[in-house]
Length: 209
Ligand code: 5GP
Ligand code: 5GP
Ligand code: 5GP
Image (cartoon, rainbow, N blue to C red; front, side, top):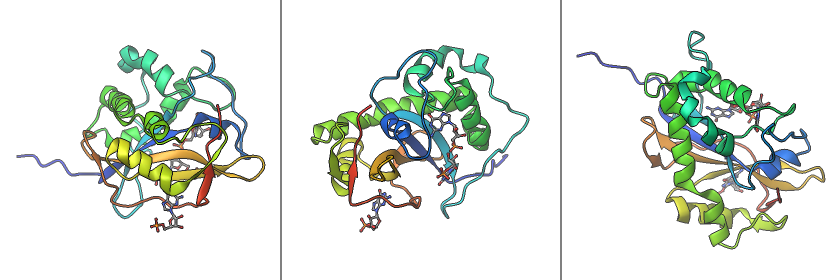
């Protein structure tokens, strides 16, 4: 029997709030060539990780992003995984970057089509904005407690998220990315074996988009 060695321990599934990418003090943003995305969380990536907090990257130079392998997913990727980096793009360079840097490190489990399909179905499953809105936490430029944000997502998804903040141009800490953990098959959300680093305030802004 061939035993396939496990080359990572779990995934971070990372979603970004476009309003916080766009008003950050670090970068400006550009809408996709297909137009302004919906005011909703978008996928950033599905990142293989080790339990000690480190992670592999750029694992297979011989397996480049090939849009023809995901042609049936492209319209969903445009809606759910838009790129807001400048200059404006149709998303392909962002998807290619994510595949090459992260996706190739889980290719023993998820081929290219499964990798993108898995991320899309995780996004549908987690419904972050709906969980937050149900708790009265709206993208209205208001300030919300970090603990309440985490509770709302835990209530909606069943699992404790990690929140990454960035700063707007006035220096306010704001809700930028939400990390959830997924088992190494990509099938199930799990409690995170380890959380990333980084600081938020105890009250953070949820900007409009
Ligand atoms: P930053 O330095 O902005 O936090 O992260 C830059 C990039 O490093 C991310 O877009 C992601 O590709 C990678 N990265 C940062 N933190 C982690 C992590 O905890 N796990 C993994 N797998 N990648 C990470
Ligand atoms: P990471 O290496 O952290 O996984 O991904 C960040 C890279 O993707 C950066 O090179 C960034 O310019 C590019 N990128 C393209 N579109 C986006 C976007 O919408 N959000 C973020 N965070 N990065 C993007
Ligand atoms: P505790 O474990 O008591 O909830 O939090 C310990 C520290 O981690 C506190 O400084 C708290 O603000 C910070 N912290 C807790 N959860 C998060 C999170 O999701 N994101 C970030 N950036 N910090 C957090």
